[in-house]
Image (cartoon, rainbow, N blue to C red; front, side, top):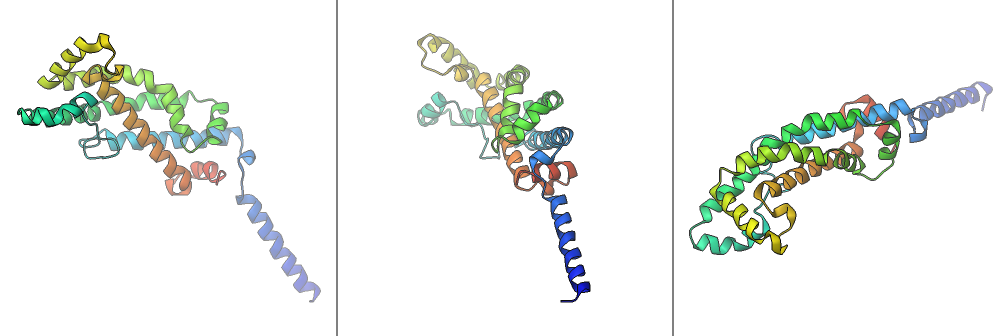
Length: 231
């Protein structure tokens, strides 16, 4: 092979090597600033997508993954209640519970964004190297308590319109001292609030998994750069 051809081949291989090193980033190659920026962008993208999908009419009711069914005690009594003519009221209560959750979910947006802003660089590195739902776990840890406080009054305002919810709450108050019912099912509003939170975090988790599978598909360069380094 002539010296010129050898030179061209060497130059070509060198170009490939340079290009490969430019794109084959690992997490350790990223600056703290990039890691934090990419994660925060992903957090905002995933959380806001979850809110937009759930905080609309039928966001819960028509989504089998998060649809809120009746509390266990009512579910078990459903056949008997239907026989005694309460089937329609049960259906109305189930719709009301899902509507309450759909109404409450948009209130999560500012708290989720505040959690993103509060994230430290150390948090970002830890979350990026965690499991496929480590982002969701972060949100759950940071926002569950304040979200429950915000959701509960709105949920109660909606579910209180159902006479069956009022009767359920009265019955639960009578048996609460016997510890026969989990605390989260002691009232309809407490039950719906918890299920709304579960649904929100489930959907954030689904969005997180999608981002991790295809970070480039988000259309964000920084998300693609940071999450692409994990694949």
